[in-house]
Length: 147
Image (cartoon, rainbow, N blue to C red; front, side):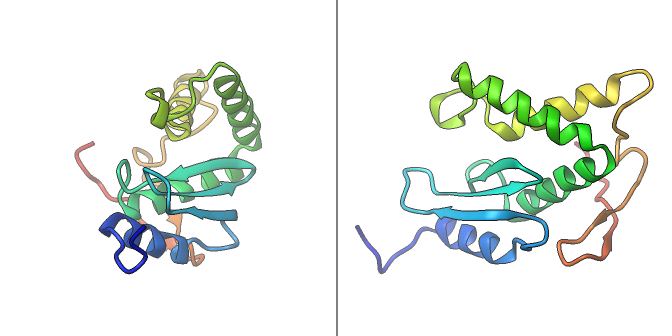
C-alpha cells in the first residue's frame, strides 16, 4: 500500500515511539501496517498497546509513567496485573480490536480496585497530588482536569 503517504495517526504513533524512554519501557514494537496501527511495549513486564484511536500521545506516555510509578510503589501491582492479563487473554476478553476491553482498561480497573481496599494498596496519585516522573527522569505535576 501507499508507502509515500501516512495517516496522521501513524505519524503520531511514530512520534510516540521516538518519545518512549528505554529506561521506562522495553521491547518497543511498532505495528503500523495493521488495520488499527499500534505501538506495543512493556513496562515492568506488563504489555501496553497504544493506538491513536483510543489515546492521545501525551495520555499514552502518561499511562506508561503511571503504570511504572505504581509498579515501583507496590511491586505486587505488576504481578497482579500480569495475572489479570493472563486471565483476560485465556478467556478472550483482552482486545479492543475484538470488541472487548483493552489491557489498559484492565490496568485502570485494577488500580481503582487497589485504591478502594482498606487500607488502600495504592494511593490515588491525582487526588493526593503526588508528582509523576517525566520519561526523562524529572518530576511532573499531574494535570488537574475534570475527569
